[in-house]
Image 1 (cartoon, helix red, strand yellow):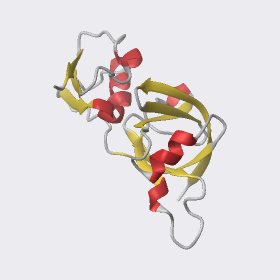
Image 2 (tube, rainbow, N blue to C red; image 1 turned 135 degrees about the horizontal axis):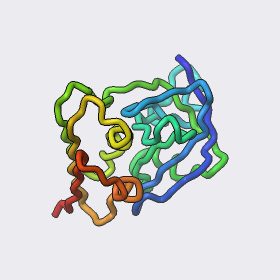
Image 3 (cartoon, helix red, strand yellow; image 1 turned 180 degrees about the vertical axis):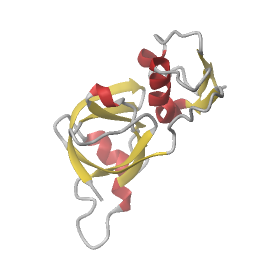
Length: 175
C-alpha cells in the first residue's frame, strides 16, 4: 500500500465549523473526479496495531489540474479524536494519505444524472459536477439538489458561478 505524508499548504474556512484542507500533491499521484482516500494523522501506524481513531475516509474535492489535494470536513471540537487533532493542525503540518479509490465516477451511458446531497455531503460529488461542466460526453443533463440545515452552504464560490443549460442546481434549507 502506497502512503504519502503530505504537508498542509492551505486551510480555508468554508462555513461555520467546516474547513477545507489543501495538501501538496505529489507528481505521481493521480485522482479523477469522485476519488476518495483515507486521511490519517502522522503516527497513526506506530506500534503493532494502527490507531483507527486517527484515520477517516474523505472525499477529494479538487480536480487533478488544480495541483493540490483538498478535502473538506466539519471540525467542531469534541466530536472525535481525529477531528479534534485535525482542528489543531496548521499550514506546514503533515497528514498521511493512503488507499485512494473511486466509487463516485460518473457513468457516461447517455442518461441524465441527479445528485441529492445534504450539507457537506456535496463534497463527494463536487469534482463530478465540476468535471461535467467541462466535459458532458455521454451525459445529457445533470441536476444537483443540495439540502442544508443552516444558511452556510459549502462550496458556493465553486458552484454558484456554474452556468450551463444542461446543469441545474438547487439549494434548499432544511427546517
